[in-house]
Image (cartoon, rainbow, N blue to C red; front, top):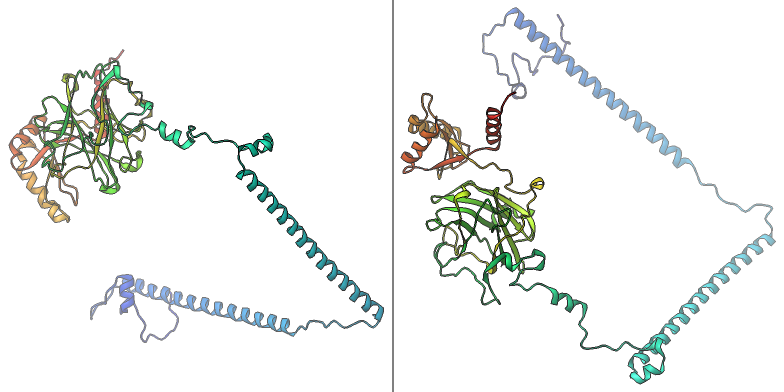
Length: 497
């Protein structure tokens, strides 16, 4: 067995009597009085003490070696500085063979060099003075020519004649300004053709435009509404009406505004197919797309405003919404910014309603101005093979048949509160989970929960019976769930040779 070095054991920390530092570093505690270790334990402890003693001795040797190296380096440096300081710069003495003629010739050369340098400086000053005088003459002659009348200009010849300004000629800047699209009209680049649709609203100037009235108390109070007639989702791609174009202005201090598209039977807009809501100052600015069913908002699609052309603070902006079999495509100044996929069966819809709400859901007035609205047919601008980066595209936002979503709960932060809420939901929704009960998912720090029932019928029953106590609705499928279901269906319906 190894034996430690013979060092003094006074005030030395051991595994049997560890110091406070050793207790904190190695998470050990003091052995109780009367503790007797077994022979194997004692050997192990002795080995630990031996290793620890060796480590201390190795550390001491390393420190001594380092100090010795530093001392050697310091001694070498001192010797080098002494040798350098001991050297003296040799003094230049005149040679014995240097005679008076050499000294005189050196003085003469120095005088000639000094004289030539002064001459060069003088010549340079003279040239600069001549150039300045010539420039002044040219400026004086130019001023005389410009101040002369037309007859004088003709006498000078064609090379010196001034170009006479015609007051009828417009400047380049004024020509560009004259070509700018008026605020209340669509730009020609959008190719809005009158025979392919109709103007629903048109302002001739700022006074005839529409802005949400400050007296409105709710979204439907004094809102601007239009009928989007002759809609057929199956004909939208070919020649049917499919596009809404809106020319508007949202000032820089506007917090938000919204646009709704719904079916004819919207029940005071409790059912909304498409909700467009840019929010200027929320989470750095974001566009919120959503739908509404029976007065309850669905799962929102959020797109950062930083990825889109500027919506707020512009003199005017053009928004285009195209409706087709896939959903609603949003274009801001011709850029495809977002898509909301259909969450309703559009095959039974033949007329739509367009609404510009006066306030948000809390009754706060929305600040923006509408100049022009057009409804008609345009060629679909979205390219299905280039949807990468388009917010909401391929989101697979279908409803889950058995999973429920409950919102409006008090936030839970610690594990005990989460476990308590999970136990309560498992008890309250027990009969909707079949033999195994329901599955409850409660994210931390959230105000919502997910509950999965045993069957689709039990999920419908839970919504009917528990909607009085909770804000409950169907949850939406996740992307991988939709892809998995589609793969299963295609495999089940395929024919084998």
